[in-house]
Structure formats: structure tokens, C-alpha cells
Length: 111
Length: 116
Image (cartoon, rainbow over all chains, first blue to last red; front, side, top):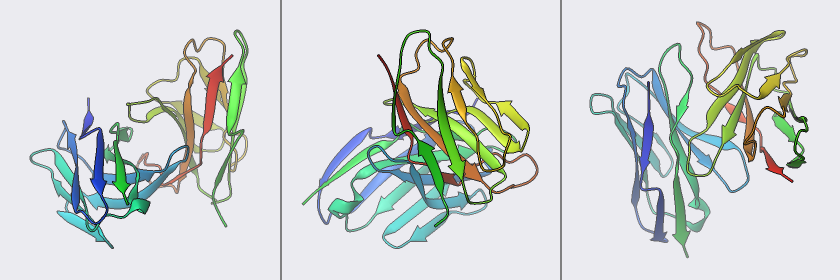
């Protein structure tokens, strides 16, 4: 059964710092991996989707990498801003199974 | 603008009461999903529907029921059999990804359910 963990559970950084969020999964036979953002009391917004054949995806200041063999993905946020404060969740999809979400990393960027 | 509307935003349930959470989408998506979110845990799938008049149990369906009479609507009923219903409930949708893919693409803003 696929399990997804995220470290750290919470992170607080000063504005302008580059940071890395980590996601680990136990079953490496994934179809794709997705990173989401969730603001307090809101739904999820998709940030980046990486197919199993890809190594990374970039969108603006965000870069997500995928290492299937080691069961890991990282989300890199460059030059963090207070508006980046949110919970970041990763989720993995194994073909024919249900999407499995990690518990999230709660990020606070201090001005 | 297209999107998913969940209502109400906050809901309180009394002991022994059934309550229904509404989810409506105007994205013309075929598939719809209900998730439960508890603090410190990932989202868990309750039910999903890939087509009108058909739905399947997710990982934690006990104590919940759904219907899919219209493409746009996928209401979730939390029954009295659900002994720990306090959580944040999220509805999601996706296009038909084919070949049994079950991957939500758009999410509503959730309903927070609490016990009185």
C-alpha cells in the first residue's frame, strides 16, 4: 500500500530565503506525482505535476524534482515571499489506484 | 468563471443526525470526488464517481453515502453511523482521464463539519 510522508511538518523562514520541501513515497511504481498548495480554510491548488518519465518541472520560482528509484520528490521555492505562506502537499498516483496524499508541510515566510 | 462550489462553509451536526454537504461544479467534468482532511493527515478518499448514476467507495466510505443524479452535482451525506465526523471535507473534480484514472484536478473550498 502506497504511503506518502512529508518532512518537515512545519517550516518558518525569513523572506528572500530559498527553501526545499521534501516528499517521500514507499511504492516507486508511480504514474505521476503532483504538488499542491492549500491556503488556510481553502481547497487545494495544483502547482506542478511530474510524470513518471520526467525528472523535474518548473513554474516561475517553483521547481519540483522526482527521483522514482529512491521514492523522493523535492519542491524548491526560490526567493520566498510572505505570499508563499501556505501548506504544501504532495500526492502520488499509481495507475488504477486512488491518489495518495501526504500530510503536508506548513510553510510560514516571515517579512 | 468555472469552478466547484461547496456549501455550507461550516456545518454542525447533532448526535444521531444525518447531514448533507453540497458540491456543484460547472466545469463539465465527468469525475467527482469527496475527500476528508484531518489535522496532520493527508486527504483520504471517501467516494468517487466517474459518470452519472455510478459511484464507487474510496478508502473510508463507512458512515457516508453519495448520489450522482446529475453531472454537475455530487452531494455527500454524513450519516449517524459515522462516529467521528468532525473534519474538513473537500470535493474535487476532473475530466475523464480514461483507463480508470482517478486523479482530481480542481478542488472546492471545503466544508468544515463539527459535532454539537
